[in-house]
Structure formats: structure tokens, C-alpha cells
Amino acid sequence: MTSHDGHLHAGHDHAGDQHSMHEGHEGHGDHSGHDAHGAHGGGGVNAMAASATLHCLTGCAIGEIAGLMIGTAIGLSTGWTIALAVTLAFAFGYALSTLPLLKSGLAVGAAFSVVLAADTLSIATMELVDNLVMALIPGAMEAGLVNVVFWIGMMIALSVAFVAAFPVNRYLLQRGKGHALTHQYHGAEPVQEGVRRFIPSFSSGALAAVIIAFMLGGLSVAIADEMGGGSAPVEQVEMEGH
Image (cartoon, rainbow, N blue to C red; front, side):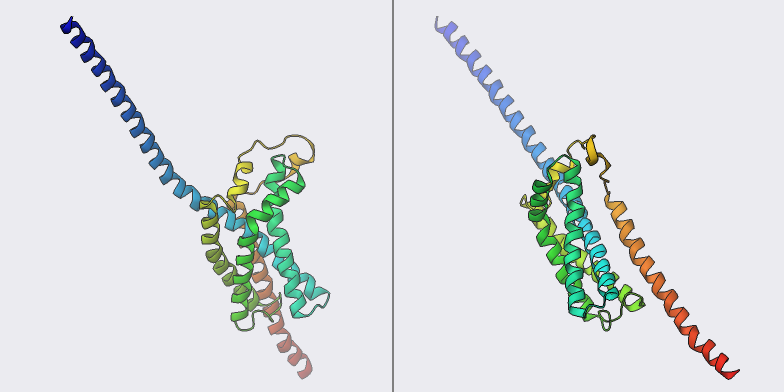
């Protein structure tokens, strides 16, 4: 009887050991997966932060140029023109972030509320830095749209603004804020009915191409205008000579 009890006890201990080993193995596996997920998450956060910053940068660039064009066309003062440009920069920045949420089926009011919470700090940082850099570049603010100084200054200002806004977006994403609030909707199945199915989707590469084309187009027009303006006095002098 003692021998039998000892055998049972030994068997019980063996089963317990197996169970402990199994639990330890599962725990170790989960821990490894967690570490791998953390490493992947770091790269994912950087990619998401870059994409979020690019969306804001595109909206800011389009809004600012549109504001400057409108302000110049209707004869607004420099201060009011800048105010209009900043307002439109926020409007276009919000719009670009709202489109994917609307395409996923979210209501307009709900989508705007999410974007307002997600993008405001990023756009504000970008606008502050962008206008500060433009103000520091001699003659950039007063140059006008058809001027090489303006476009080169804008390229520098937007580049610095991107660098400044990227860590802001990354910080917010790591804490579940910023574009983390919109990320769940970006992965949702797009609505395939009604007007929402016509809402376009913009990749990070497409947005980058839009910004580059926008800047180079403006710079090309400015260069062409200056070259044309430079030749006019020479032709005028020749005509006066005759």
C-alpha cells in the first residue's frame, strides 16, 4: 500500500512538473511574441508618424499657397493674407485626414471630431515652424508668388516643419493619441455604396509626389517670369535706340 501510494504520489509530481514546464513554456512564448511585437511596433510607429506628418504637410502646403494666391489677387494686406493662408492650411489639413474616415463609413460630424483631436497639435506645430522659418528668410514673406525667393523659402520652411512635426506625431502615437485615434478607421473596409465610394484614397507616396510637383511647378513659373522680366528692359532699350 505504501509502495502504491508512493507510486501515485510520484506520478502526481511528474504530471505537476509537466504542467509547470508547459506553463513556463507558454509564458516564455508569449513573452517572446511580445518582444517581437514591440520591435515591430517601433517601426510601425515611425511609419505611421511619417504618414501622419506627410498628410498634414500636404494640407498645409496647399492651404498656404491657396491663401497667398487669394490674398494677393484680392489685395489683402500681408497680415490678413498670412491669416487666410494659415486658416486654409488647417482646413486642407483636416480635410485630407477626414476623407479616409468618411470612406470607412464614419459620419461627417464624428469624423471631424476625431480628426480635430488627432491633427490639431501636428498642424499647429507645422504652421508655427513654417511661418517662423519664412519670416527668418530675408525677403521670403514679401517676395510674392511669382518669385524664386518665395518658392525656395517655402521648400526650406516646409522641410523644417516636417522635421519639427514628426516627433510630435510620434510622441502622440506612442501614447495612443494623435493619428492613433484614426488608425482603426484606416484599416476598415471602405464603403462601396453611395457617394462615399467615390472618395479618393491617397498613399504617402502620392502625397509626397503632389508636394514636390506643387513646389517645382511654382518654382518653374517664378524662374520663367524672372527670365522674361529680365529680357524686357533690354528689348525696350533696343526699341528706344531705334
